[in-house]
Image (cartoon, rainbow, N blue to C red):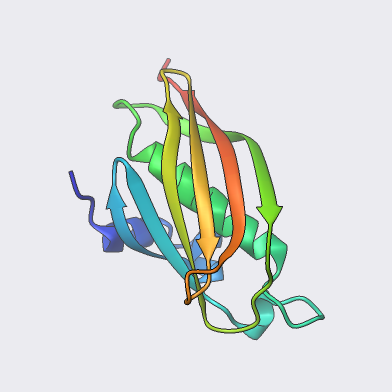
Length: 135
């Protein structure tokens, strides 16, 4: 089942992902991809994309992947997130691709690869999302 990536981008209007400029490009229940254009206001004093922007991008993509896998009426929240940084990037666009490691009844775990335009791995994020079942 393919999900409209433009609808996912629109769903985040008025929230942090819109402020960052996150744009979803592909989405299925097994894989979600989004991208972020590097801007000066997202950089560190050293001129590289801020690690917090990378982490926010990964959290957005992992949470969105959980959201599209939830049972009716359920919601989600991030329980844990671990980021390993491998390289910095100063310009261009970064891409975040998340795939499931575990999709259970009460938790889901997603692995997100953040890469630059050449495909170089910048960061790897593993996050656990809690499934909040309706009461």
